[in-house]
Amino acid sequence: MHRTPKNIFVLNLAISGISTSIICIPPTLIQCLYGGKWYLGLVACKLVPTIQGTNILVSSGTITSIAIDRWISITKVTNGFPTKLTHTKVILINILIWTLAFLIASPVLVFQTIDTISLPWSSFSMCVEVWPAQWMKNTFTIIILCFQYLLPLIVLPLVHSQV
Image (cartoon, rainbow, N blue to C red; front, side):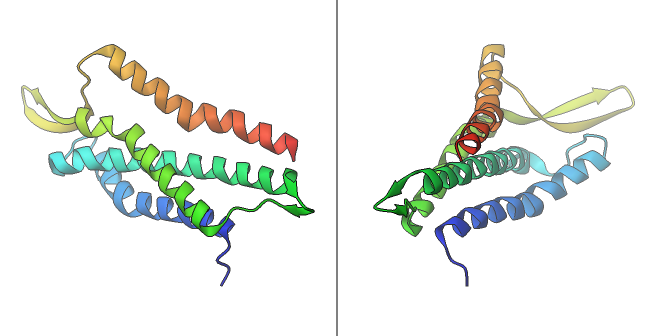
């Protein structure tokens, strides 16, 4: 078996992908098939987007960590040997990635709710984010943008150009 520290990063990506496939895609598909209507209740309304956000952040965080690990192992040589992360360090990094990803995505748990849309001929429920203030929504969006897009966009080309 190839239980190298680097493969623990790959396992982390797999767990995130499988979690998205099992937990997030079916409810999202149901919602899409029913025109945005939500039939799965408040708990699922809060959990599915939070888990989805967490998994997406874990994927980008893990890919960024893999790039940094590759850069360290190629450019940082001690006593003629490349610097390597241990299994324990990689596991701790993965735990940190999951924790940060959940913390960043966690406002969705608070502000995701079911909104009832009433029309003269019918009413239905939708799972939506309702923020108490626009600045809070904007701040959340900027934080997600930074961690999901800008951090990997900056780190990956930088470390790959150094390799």
